[in-house]
Image (cartoon, rainbow, N blue to C red):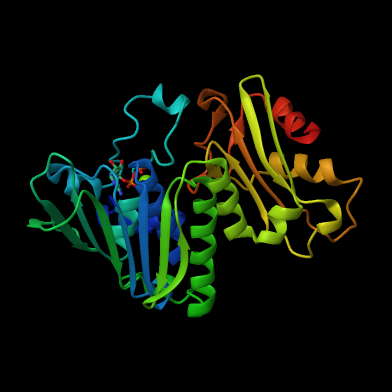
Length: 325
Ligand code: ADP
Ligand code: MG
């Protein structure tokens, strides 16, 4: 063994990126979450070669101050929490201040943004290097564009694990649908190699929410599924559950959101499975889209880097609430 040495910031970020950035779709997820946290009402996603050569996401959110642009690319830099108390009740999708730094460490990243008070847009670029990014003015509407080129250009080990374009693009498509389902007020456009794949107009009404679910899960699902809405103990459970006889052979339509965040949580899936258990043939998967809204201080989302798992403070109660309804 050699002597102990501190990792360079770049290498540390590349290691951290291993947890957060598994494939192009992971970047799309992180950048979309940032756009939603920024209050965007319109998000445009352009993908080339399944994200291997380009991922460009534009939003019309609040933007980033010119002086903060370079900082946003560094690790542990966030505008979403400031104290340990904030950690107890997270209302934003992000809070770890890791995504942009991780993306920057494994790709050629350009961040362009303009705030309402800014007279013009500004951009910073980094190419996985340790050097200070330079700031330059450029034309841009209010909001932010994140441009990720040549993913894993400097991490060959990671590049090797990328699958065929169709597979990688399917992952991206799925991530966009998952996120779009939780926020029907936001308009989304997804293009791949210049071809429009998904166009989802935004709108606040319940009909728009239904339309969004039908665009993602198919009209047949929404038509046949039961809609329900229950409230108890400051928790709300809203959504569509497919009838047992419409259960599918794949678990491709199982969406459970906790405070707008898609979770793949054991407790949640167990409760749902149990609720269906008497009615379902083995090997069949129920279809459902459920949104649980629970006070932010009753759930801990800081359990997993990709935040797919959560911890409920009153887990038994939550389990039974899902099960009984
Ligand atoms: P986190 O989302 O956990 O805070 P990120 O690395 O994803 O960390 O982003 C760092 C910071 O950059 C965010 O806290 C936010 O202030 C800013 N930011 C990133 N993307 C956007 C965006 N699309 N619009 C506005 N601000 C953004
Ligand atoms: Mg983020």
